[in-house]
Amino acid sequence: GDRLGLIDETTGQPLPTALLPYCGRSLLENLVRDVQARENLYYRVFGKQHCTPIAIMTSDAKGNHEHITQICEENGWFGRKSDSFYLFKQPLVPVVNGSSGQWLVT
Image (tube, rainbow, N blue to C red; front, side, top):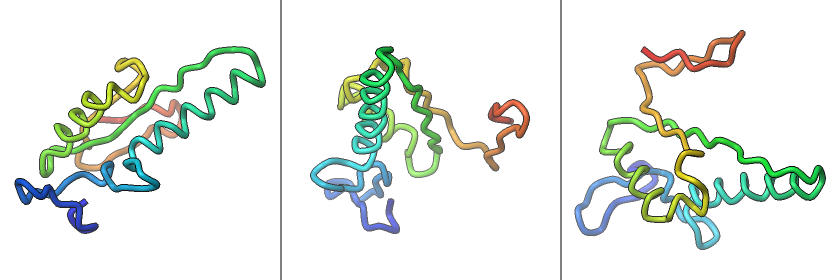
C-alpha cells in the first residue's frame, strides 16, 4: 500500500492495500460485502444458506499479516464467523496444483 500512499499518520509506516478507501469503506470491507451479497442472492434463488470461505494471502513484509488480522478483528470479521476466513502467509512463489486446486505451500 505504500506505493499508493497509504501511510499511517501516527507511525509513518506503510499500510496494507486492504485499507484503501473506496465509497466510504475499505477495499477489504467492500470485497467481503460483495461476497455476502452473492451469498444472499444464492439464498434468495435457491433457498439454501451458503457461507463462502474467504482466503486472504498476506505476507510478513511490513507487518502485512498482522495488519490484516487486526483489521478483521477490529471489524468483528465483518459480521462473519472468524473461521470462515483463511489468512495465510505468501510463500516465496504462490502455486496452485492444476489438478486438485490445492495450494502448494513450502
